[in-house]
Amino acid sequence: MKAALYARVSTSDKNQDPENQLFHLRSHAEAQGLEVVGEYVDRASALDHKNRKALRELDKDARSRKFTKILIWKFDRMFRSVAHMHKQMSIWRDYKVDLESMDDRWDTSTSEGRLHLNLLASFAEFELDLIRERTASSIQRRIELGLPVGADRIEASDPELAEQLMEVYEALDRGENNISHYARTLGIKRSTCLLYTSPSPRDRG
Image 1 (cartoon, helix red, strand yellow):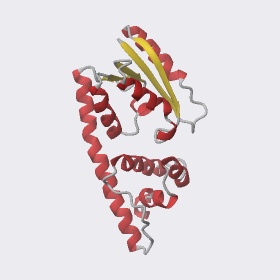
Image 2: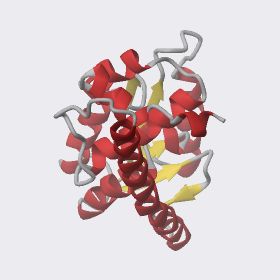
Image 3: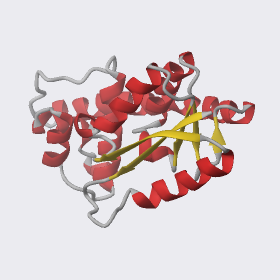
Image 4: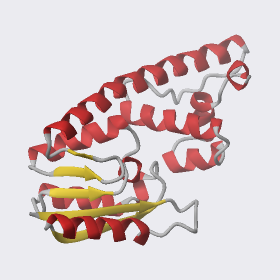
């Protein structure tokens, strides 16, 4: 069976080395008797789709059926969110490509792994519901405070951007980076990013 290895490190941490992931992935592939036909490495944050060129190359090769299995070290090394994973896996299944995450201990080539994936996918709608509620709350708060609500409204019908904004909201809440950084990453105006990701005073406690 032919396999591909995928690793990602964030550019925000200069001490990260993709070899730490690839070493284990190579050993695992060898133990399973898999033929590794490619290694794909990204050095970018999970949200930085523009600079995740290796992931796009991996997707292209999966569609070309160059391998039948993808090995990753951990779920968050490849995907932005559960919804992103489920969407991508539904595409790869059509090309008979399975995914195995070593640290998360699941493999979509098994019935248990597929069940795990479906359970995770059930949380995707929950994530989108949260961002829809938070978006509506942010708009209402700005209206009540007499603040402008820009024309660049992020509608709930854009699930991919909604997922990204959810992650930005949580990252900011943890004190990671700032609004300007994430606005540049997402390619949207700073004011737009601020509108949909800034926690309310009550949220800040």
